[in-house]
Image (cartoon, rainbow, N blue to C red; front, side, top):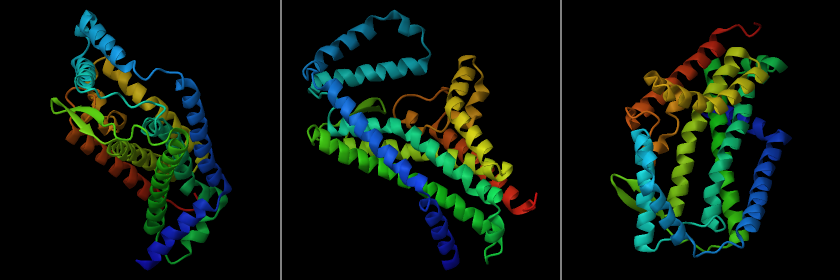
Length: 318
């Protein structure tokens, strides 16, 4: 067990020994500062008392729009939930979180998670393939570790690195948010529509929930990139294909759903975002939380089995 832990530690050190990794962290921090500057400059002249008028206009506009009745049931449900939340705000005098507040700014960090996913794909796809391309795989295999443990250590470290980048993103945006916007608005609750009613929760709880759901997509993409790295032993191909599917996967599923292809729900990209079962609605009405968890689990199992078979059974010289 101690030998395996040392193997994991060595793989972890190997990642952070690259200067490019520290550049990635620097890029995330710089993006956060630039976002804060942009948000501060765009919203500094906004009137803070317009939210009630805007909410009333939104509610009135939606209720008078008869075209909404022609939309699919899941979209109508989402719109009606937004109306209910807006009405709840008016009834209880709860303004929405401003983008130029600390929590509003931190909430916007969720948009950067996609960038982190790309970074993690590059690391995961290079983890195994680079060992073969550089010839260092032979040095790994002559050590007192079997191939399964070597593969598992690389896989675990790839996901650990993903979690570390998520944590860095959250902490960085919290620090930048406090510096630029202070702690005003921290007492405002986050409103969501669940089980037929409005639920109030703290913004911190909401942010943690968003990041937790992001871990599911990260795990899937890490596993997929890792599998391609093992199968192709080509970093460029594994990185390119993984990033391509990351961008077009959900769009492809939406295209299939638009043409009423029920089988689209079995594609992993239709099931990675579990947050839709708590806020919003799934792409296909027949989908449930349990269904999506099972589908994602099956894909993860398939990705890891293919990775293991390729890494442990194929000749190193091939």
